[in-house]
Every structure is written in structure tokens, then in C-alpha cells.
Image (cartoon, rainbow, N blue to C red; front, side, top):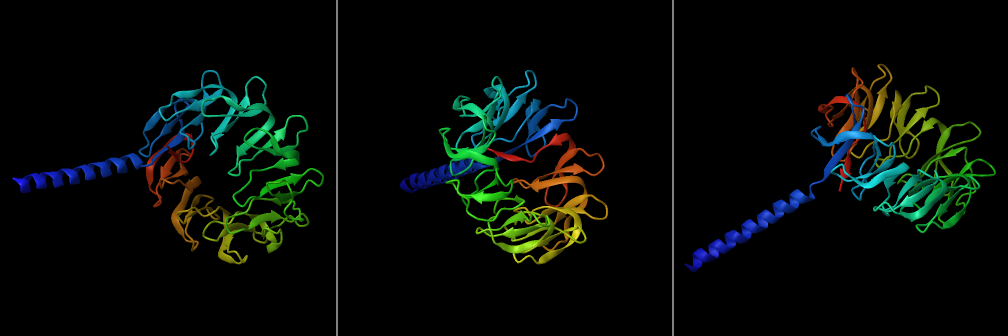
Length: 365
């Protein structure tokens, strides 16, 4: 009898543990929604990975869901923007002229419908920073956001209380990146350079055009003398001399797409500036985390995906393509109909082309 009771107890514990594990696995499974424009109504809704609507098309415009589970959408009736949850119901009523995604700090930039100035709201829709700027950018991880001053038209940076930490003195300013630098355009020279979080220039060099640094510590910049692009390190010194007609950020695999100045085709270089994939494409884009890069074929003008050897993994047969999302699907424009659908990494349609417009899948928390 004792053995029977003991056996039942062990079985019960094992069943409970299995049940809890299964429940936890199910709860932890990530979900992804994609915003799509319905071909019949021209309104926007959201689909899941099966292509079925999880939020029926009823909005004038949309965005992907932020980490807090809210997405900015434009109401089809009054034309104003608010925020919905994953059920499609408004959590923050449509009352803004423009609304952007929530940043990691829980604040979203919005354009006030009455004053037509920009401020920041929290997830309840209340102003945390009152609308008093001509334009705003999202908050970066260092807690600073680039804003355009309504009086001077110059750009500076505010903290999460709305106070200027870096006074508005730049012709243009961009978000701070993880390396602590931001690209700004100097008001006097009209040239681009890099600043730190104190607003001080970190390099003496100024460039005709500059972009933020990649993970490998290199940034592509344009030389003002010949309008060619090269790559500089954090000191502003050239590591790869200006020699390309167009350049792109280095991917995690150490390759960057560039346009050759002589034959005007695109290829990929390594961190020494040498071609790893010879220039042979009409256009080329940064490698995705799955090891594939979107390219436009020089012969037929259609787009496909290559691997790190430069060989086609997905043949060029689409009018346009996007990077693969975290759920393994990529948005493409069908080569025949021009409608949008979604493919897997073999190039096969998982969701048939049927939407007039669409965006990539994003995670919904």
C-alpha cells in the first residue's frame, strides 16, 4: 500500500512538473504581428505568421508594436493618432497629429494636434515633457533625446525631464548610439562630426557626410573633396581611404556593402577595405543576422538574397525585399503582381502576396 501511494505521489509530481514546464514554454513563446494594408479597403490591420488577421484592417496608418505592447496608429475617422494594444483597442485615444513608437524608457514623441509642437507622453497618454519643441527624436539608451528648438530652429539634447543637457547649437543632430557618440552637423561649417554626451566634439575632423559607428568601431564618411566614401575609427582617422561611390555600415559578419567608383556596381568589403565579394550587383544591402543579404541583380533588375560567398541562396525574382525578421520571415514584393507577401529563408511563400503595402513582422510582448 505504501509503495502504491509512493508511486502515485511520484507520478503526480512528475505530471505537475511536466504540466508547469509545458505551460511556461507556451507562455514564453514569442508572438509576432505584421502591419499590412488590405488590398480591398486600403485600411491597415495586423496579421500573424499564418497570414490571418489578428487585428482587422481599420486604421489609416500604423506602426509596429513597441516593447510596452502598444502601437501607434492613425484613426480612420478623425485622422488623428493614438495607441492600441494587441487586441486592436485604443489604450490612448487618437488625439495627436503625429505619434511615434515608444522608446525603451517608456516615453514616445508626439506632435500636439492643437499647438503643432512636439513633446513626450507616457504609456497612459499623459504629457511627461510638454509640447514645446519644433521636432523631436526618440530617447537613446543614455537618456538623451535630440530635439529642435522652437525659437532658434537649432538642435540640442534634452534629458528625460525635458531640460537641455546640450544646448541647441547644431544645424542637425541624430540619436546617440551605444558607443556614446552622436552625429551632428555643425551650424557654422555645415559639416558633419561626432560629439559625446557632454556635447563636445570627439574628433577635430569634419566630413561632408557622416554616419554612426558600427559594432566594429568603424563609421563610413564622405570626403568633401571628391565626394567618395571611406571608413574612419573613433579618433576620426581613416582606416579605409575614401574610394567608394556609396558605402554602408559593417554588419556583424565584418562585411560592408559598397558601390565601386569605377564600374558603379555593388560588392562587399572586409575591414581592411578589400573586396570579399566582387562588385557585381546593381544594389546591395547589409547582411542580416541569418547570414543573408538582399541584393539587386545587375542583369534582370530583380532582387534576391545572397550568402557570405556572394552566391544566390534565394534567386532574384522579387521587385523589392526586406531583411528577415526575428520570426524567420521576410517581406517581399512579388515579381509579377507587385503585391506584398512573406517568404521563409528558402524563398518559398509562407504568406501569399496579397497586400498593397506591408511591413516586417515585429515582436508583440
